[in-house]
Image (cartoon, rainbow, N blue to C red):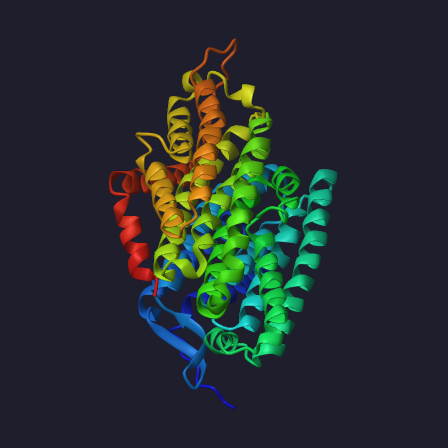
Length: 479
């Protein structure tokens, strides 16, 4: 069957995919590093603009089922991923020069990974989603290991690769079971097939659904698929760690939410309680281990694991609550988390240039560079969910409401305890910024790093002023 292609629908993804090759070719012809970075920024900006004409379109359709849909949900997640990827590119400028990374390869791999993330938000069949997952994952292995003479980076990349290979195998096994039971790959047809599956095949369908969820669990660093996160964050260049923490996680949650809502909804009674347990264990383990960290990157890694638990919590409602409600809560939390976390990583990336990666190395930062200290303190307060970082509190309230609405009151209690645990290490870090230091050293901020932090801070301030706008946008985006 020859399918008509709506190029406006796939334009943002197409721009990033073609742009990645263009960046690699430009580097092959000796383009300066600064120009390569600028070209990457322009490609991401063009893709963000292209979201407008492509909005509301579908393509690669057979009958009423489409493999690529540029609806409100996809546009929201793609906008989040493109804007945060833009900040990552700005943060990367200094890292590329300092670590002697090949600029062309770095930006090519980054854009290739962004292509996979964009496709995850728009894919509507299991094959497309698996291809998108691998397109997002494979370039990241190389990005982590791009510091070729760094043994820690190589070890981190190997761990990420091995865990990812196992995860891909489990995901494909689950998809094969789902296809065997339903005879369909498009998510809407999968849902119809699962709704009328014979009783003797329901256990097979349930195993398939759980296996697919496990594959996405790796991407979002949910327990017990989280083991790669701390070592990989620590071994990777800091902008790559920021990419994993924000862009990769947003792509993973977009795909997981779509699969559960559009495809596996008839078995919500099976995966709902499972995700509730997964969310509780993920946030608890992440917070407990974050309490023990003194390396700021490992602290952010375990904090990211804990935040994944909060994002999973609304999904625990399963069929007991309308999908629109928990999808809205998850989408809003991911959007707010992305702004907060990319800002924190931005400041850490700048400060790390002075060799400061230990918590005590941040003592006296307010005296050495008041702007950086205030920005980091604001991001940490937002992550903790305290005023004036109202958006962090707002995000947690939205998730609490979704969890209680799904009759998962026990999970709301676990979330309350974990919120207090998060307060301890976030505020402990923030307090160090204003503590006296023996020899406060001046921290210089480069132009690109300053722009990246300014963009993140501006976004955080806007959302803090009116956090309900994010929830309103998420509610409108969710079908």
